[in-house]
Amino acid sequence: MGKKLLIQNDERVGDWVKARVPTLELGATPYTGIGLLNEGGQLIAGVVYDTFVGTSIDMHVAAVPGRRWMSRRFLGEVFRYPFMQLGVRRVTGRVPASNEDARRFDEHIGFKLEGVIRKQLPNEEDLLIYGMLKEECRWLKVGMFKNGR
Image (cartoon, rainbow, N blue to C red):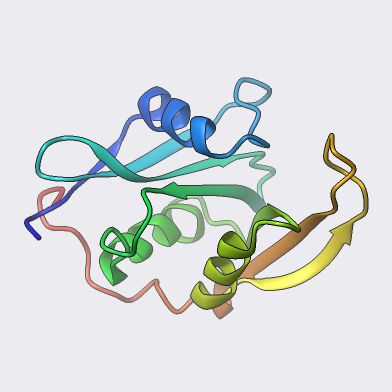
């Protein structure tokens, strides 16, 4: 499997995540993008943070199919940014009710289902709200990427 490189490139990661998360609207507010590149320099996972309001921020995640991209280090980095660098108390994720893979992923990494916005999406689908508080985040103490790797 080779080494992977962590990058912060708002536009590149933002466009890549947007192509995979149709409910993400870029440009309405400032955003930050953190991505994971494979050895060939291709994005294999990306996180976009937006709607930063001091105590909370929204987080949108996309990845190539399969679990090879997901590592404790990557999860540590993507949660250290909002909780440690920005100092937020909570991270919010929004998931279409029909996206079972995203729901399982959010719950597996520690998000809690907090609510439902009924008929929120254009097809009248419900939107699920997931949240994670800083004190609930188990990823903050895992190893960090060294020299971006």
